[in-house]
Length: 437
Image (tube, rainbow, N blue to C red):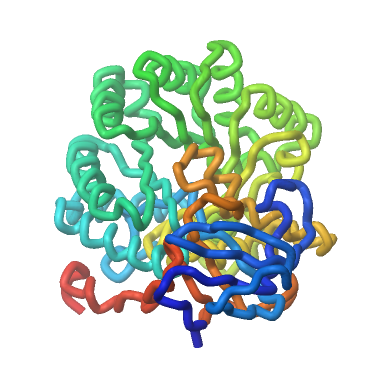
């Protein structure tokens, strides 16, 4: 049962356990026991546990408190189409073809907007305060989806802060007319220039052209790079080369980077060094990467040989800003998920092995809060400090293993100092969009 949060808006969360990494000590894995005073929708003060006396006092008895989540890489336009368009074999190629078919047949404005809104209600109920989504840009979808996104962004302002990146394939990027049309519409919407490429003979030219037009229009960049099991995939290295050679000064994010994990040690080190020098941030999508990568289209059953994720620990050790995120939700690229930042953290710990030593593990709570907020330059900081909005999540667990051993379905979500309704929307709301049952 959720805790009862006073309606008056002035109270203290006593004996709250919070990660030191979210209170000004970013590398610390320690938990600190504190009293968090809430007033007028904001964190008024954070003091040592037991030092604050207020009439409205909620004793958390050492339970963990985190700031609201930041989801740096999602696909709100694809979400929840699985009932009408499944992935026939679970592969990345199967997903690409299935989404193309569904987009051409169904992605009218109302369809996209309703599914986006449904996904955002899920994210909000789970405790997310900021989301970056990628939007498919194959013309004429770039006009439809940007219009929808602008309406949705305005409607959700004050609840979920939204950003969007226009997602193009290599053919669009190499077509100057199409690239400029997408980039111009992206600029008008206050968006980010995005794209997707893995093993492609034109990768150097693709990355140079993308960086050039981003620089010309003053756009940031967020790309899907090397979402592939092929060690020859070189999009990430080509991106780093293009950024370094051009002196591009905007923000650059690379998602997936799966091939890095199957390259030899000398190649991986060379690429990581370039990524660090270029100032590129990397976001790993552990659940989706593990679902799609190393899944082969064969007649028999085959167990995967690797987890599909990038070298996130090595990237972080090299000074590369990193984050983890949801990626797709109930669509051909990932049949599951609900835009739950805690699920991303929980599964990320298992898949990416950032859970040991457990004395350091809580530093990784930044990967779904403060670090993606800084990478994306959201207004929401994802930090715990006096003066910021009281956007918090109260969990039932006092340690890493207590927190991670359960799905935390009974968490309490506080926004601007008040508890919100965490009831999730019913899938039946979308039934009429899914076609005949």
